[in-house]
Figure 1 (cartoon, each protein chain N blue to C red):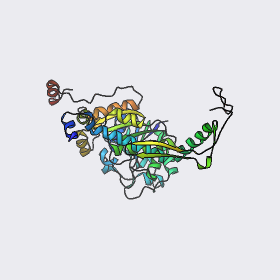
Figure 2: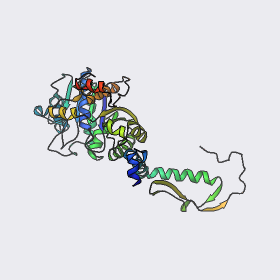
Figure 3: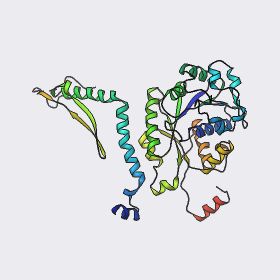
Figure 4: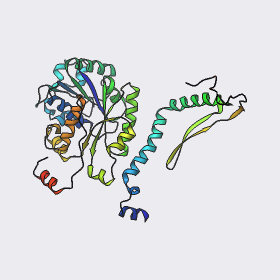
Length: 264
Length: 99
C-alpha cells in the first residue's frame, strides 16, 4: 500500500508542477515505484515539464469516465521504468472529475505504487478540493514573498479543515544574495510565520529554466544547486534525516574558482 | 532623507525583508480571524464564562472584535457590566471551576 502526497500552494506560479516532477522523479531514482498525477484539468503542464507530452493518448478524465482502463492512461517515463504519469485533460474543465471519482482513482493507484504524487491546480476551488481528496500527506510550496506566503497560510488552514495535518513546507526560489542583504525573507521568517515543518529550500536557479526547456527534471542534474536541494527533499520525504543545505554564496576567491571549474 | 541616510549605512529599518514580514504578520492576523468567525465566537463564550465568575454582564450586548490600526491589531471587547458580585471569595478557587 503506497502513500498519497499532494503538492499544493494556493498561489499560482510558485513552482508546484516543477516540484511535483522533481519529487516524483527523485523518488523513482531512489528505486520507488512512483506515479505523478496532474489534476490541473484544462491547464495541463506536468507532461511538458516531464518531457512526455508526445506520448499522451488517454487522460485522467477518460479514466474517471471509464473510457479507458487506468493502465492504458499511465505514461511510462523515458528515464525510469518505475515512474509513470497520469496526465490531466486539456480540453475539459476542473469539474470534469468529481471528488468521489478522484478518491476512487487515487485509491486504485495506491494499490500499485509506493508513492502517488498529486500536482494540485492553483486556487481553492473544486480543482483543489479534488486534488486533496485522496491525499494522506501534503506538501505546501511557497516563495519567500508576501503574497505567496499569505496564500500558503490560507491553504494550510484549508488542509487542516480537511484533516490533512502537519503539511510539509518547501520554500522555492530563494535568492541567497538577497537574503544576505536583508531584502528577502529567510527560511526562519517563513517557517515562523506559517508554523509548519520545513522540508526543503530550493534556491532560484537558472538550471531550472534549462531543465524545463529540455523536459528533464533538475533533480537528475548533479551539478545544479536546485537539483541538490530537490534530492535532499526527496530523501526527507522517504524518511531520511538530511540537514538543510547551506545556500550562502561564498565570497572566497578559491570557492568562486572552484565553482567556475565545476568542483563543489 | 533619514531613509536615505539609513540606507547608506545599511541600517536594519530600511530592509525590505523587515517590511515584508511585518506586513505579512498583520495581514495574517486578519486573514485567520476572517477564516474562522467561530474562533471569535468561541473566545466570546470563554470570556463570558470567566467574567461571569466575577460580575454579572449583559451577554447579549457583548462585543468582541479585532481592530486594525496602522501597524497593529488589537482585540477590542465591549462588555457591559450589570452587577458586581459581592460574595467573591478572594484566593479560594471559584465554585464554577475552570476548564
